[in-house]
Amino acid sequence: MRSICIFAGANPGIKPEYQQKAALLGRLLAEQDIRLVYGGSRNGLMGIAANEALAYGGEVVGIMPTGLFKAEIVHRELTELVEVNGMHERKAKMAEYADAFIALPGGIGTFEELFEVLCWAQIGLHGKPVGLLNTLGYYEPLMGLIRHCITEGFASHSNLEAIHIADEPEDLLSQMRHHSLLIPEKKWS
Image 1 (cartoon, helix red, strand yellow):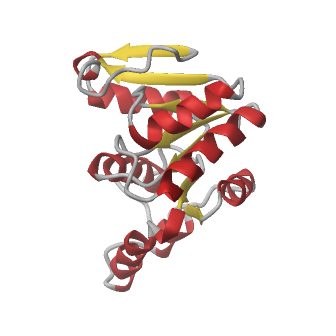
Image 2 (cartoon, helix red, strand yellow; image 1 turned 90 degrees about the vertical axis):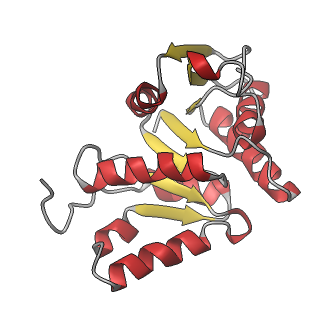
């Protein structure tokens, strides 16, 4: 893994642990010479992770649609800032740059990005590791929902197995380094 795309909240969250773990992940990526790819904002958890990676000499690539430059307060001190036309192009470009994906705590946009890369893995468009930084158990309700989907016959167990989850950034990175491509249980057309 030479490049990891993070999905994270444009807000910092109400508990300091969210910010602390985002900063720790940014620092670890820099120390391990892993490029951080993200949406390009200086706000929220994504900005915290980017700033920490930069502070430790890491490479940080932001990818942002022109229309969000003002709304999300574009981070202009990045190693590279890629300007794209819209959200679909942004996500495609982030996936192109990334060898893996990590979702930190976040809101609807974070969930949407996470589910898109999980869907892409499910239908065989990529075999890249997908991880959840489960700070303070943030992703437990989501994992419960995925287990419920499986129990009710709407998803296969391979969907759950495709997700790496850990409370600590070090543990998550370790899991993701040992990722093996899971073959979907059924073909999707």
